[in-house]
Length: 397
Image 1 (cartoon, rainbow, N blue to C red):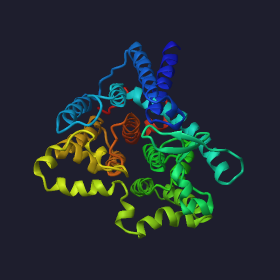
Image 2 (cartoon, rainbow, N blue to C red):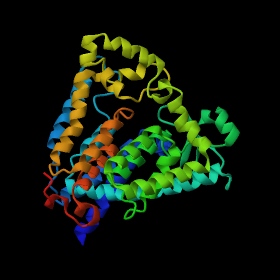
Image 3 (cartoon, helix red, strand yellow):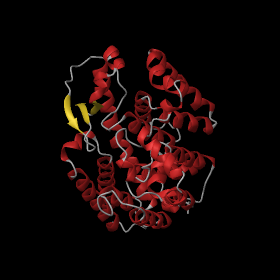
């Protein structure tokens, strides 16, 4: 009984810490204090892990490569970041120091807590866009200094108000309480893939599916449909396809505006992960063998003006081809640590490697947690259907 209580406290503490590390809008007013709270919660969770005498440090190859990546990116080129290591990196390292069965258990709790918050967020979102409830906006400033309009568990960029489509329809993509629609869309899509599209058993997945759909994120749509097609399960493909088509048919203009329109309007519209200034510098670095091999330095991409960069190219720009190789090896090492594999484990790996294209920060704790769970959850039906299975007792190493 005591062990069960400690496990539950550990799972809640670590899950909340990981949600806090996502920089949700309801914590923006706290500034850097939010990350300190997350660190404290991770510390509490880790203390409970020690009390339970779990066999931690099982992802040794990952932890070694992660330390190597941290050292390399700090030493190469000109470092524009503050300090050698930040709190989010420490959180990721500590999370990946937990045991297999702890990570599996923590993800279950994370899935529940985050899913409930997401359900409430969707409720307020629909009430707002359909004008069913008067929810006045307030101003919220994100950590990157961008201005957002905020209402309960939801935000949208302030400049959305000047968008012609918003002015005409009052509609905007679903941000939830994160800083952009693509973020919540990607998280939701990867969680659905990790759970093997098992909507029949995990009803909360429908909340994540709705979040992914209403984010109108092209990348999350691609992740969902690619993973779905590769499962080769006609029933799941039919059910999800009918649901998505049904939602789209309610207002095909939205799908045309946010998805089809981007594809049909050319490459520049589809690949919106970089800024014009970065694209210019990217062409320059490709002609410099030294910089292309070793990189310009940590966070150098952040100095390239407005527009932002969220692309795999930023990894190469900052740390070179060598840094990119180490980065990819991080995920390969996790994959190889879980030795019992089937076809679906490769689907999970592919989904994450593709995500690097538009989300170069996959070393954040929440992405790593989803990745580990997806790999463990995919290889054995017992893991998917028996909640009490001890992961360490199964032959996965």
